[in-house]
Image (cartoon, rainbow, N blue to C red; front, side):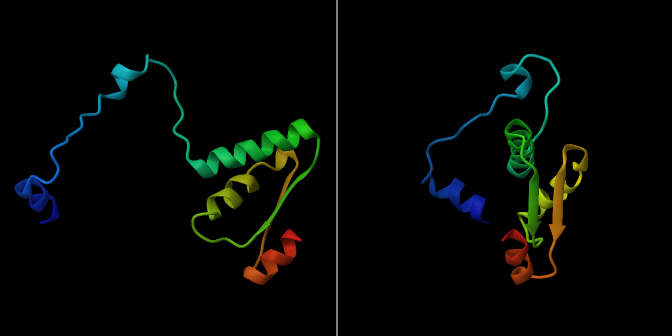
Length: 95
């Protein structure tokens, strides 16, 4: 109903067409990455370059749970994670 309203009232005179990605980018291997995954990889890279251990003490809550999940997969880089049982324990773990 909302789409039909917008079409019939002609309040929105502008339309856009998005070209397929195959025209915008040359053929190759690409990665689909979310912000949380990029943040996780950036934290790991910064930890390695600074030669400091990486620790995340956190309570899983959407949308930040993906950061905890991803970091917990990278113990081979010295990453340590702790999943707290509630918000107060998460704060205590971070401190």
